[in-house]
Amino acid sequence: MHRMYIAAITIASAIFIVSAYIAMYYGGGCRILVATTTSLYDTGLLDKLLDEFKNEEPGITVVFIPVGSGEALHMAASGDIDMVISHAPSMERGYMERGILYKQAIVAYNSFAIVGPRDDPASIRGLDPIDAFARIYAAGVEGRIHFVSRGDQSGTHLRELSLWKITGLNPSGSWYIESGLSMSKTLLFANEKHAYTLTDLSTYILLRSQSRIDLEVLVANHSLLLNIYSAYLVNPGITGGYRYSSAEKFFRFLSSSRGQSMISEYTISGIHIFNPASGYEDNLLEIWIELSKL
Image 1: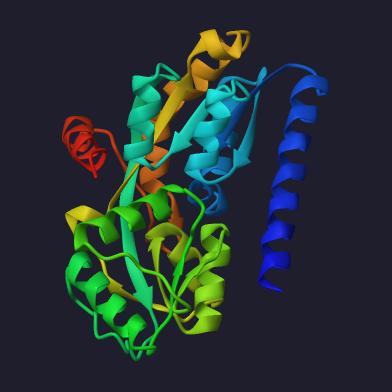
Image 2: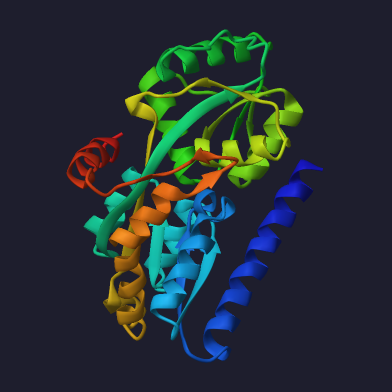
């Protein structure tokens, strides 16, 4: 059943991507393809930003392809997209060094969090993330808990792997489950399993506001959990550059005063789920550089 679930998601993603290409080539006007992390897309923030961008640039249509950061960057290397929005510093750095990503703009940030059941059988509440992962590992080996990993080379998965690397532990066994799913579906699966997982706070808040999960935030607010979202233009030498000027306009909009104000103002159930990068670009870049080394 679990393999069928993953296969269904894979097929759905493929259909979405094919539909995006059809829209771009046969819909008329100027269309650009933007591969984006699922957390930005699922929360509705990008659609809100796009509505405003359309007012400024009615001749440009932006088609979003929501995938994990790893898949988004792979699409950039293939020249299949014009722009990427990602939150995987270590992987992004490699693609920048290879010349695939042409420009960077840090546009927003929030936090990752370790969430789990209310009774917290691994007793991690309030710990730093490294100690928390060590306790999760011990409880998992003892057969007392489950941990659900994205397992998909997304930004969240890569941060999780970095945390395991720092602990010096290599999780495996029946207690450690790789979902291969989006963040929303991974949270739902973890909720069903009464398990722990690492999540971005925006997706967690979205599902909690919809009463779809009852997992609780147990570990957050730590430098190792800072979640930085960067926008990149794909090197026009790879894409052919036909839509580069249009992609650059959307790229600049995300960092503009209007775009940053909209990121700041966006809420779910009255909760601000993203912080704009405006005014903190230099500090965030320094942190991004350190995170890219993990």
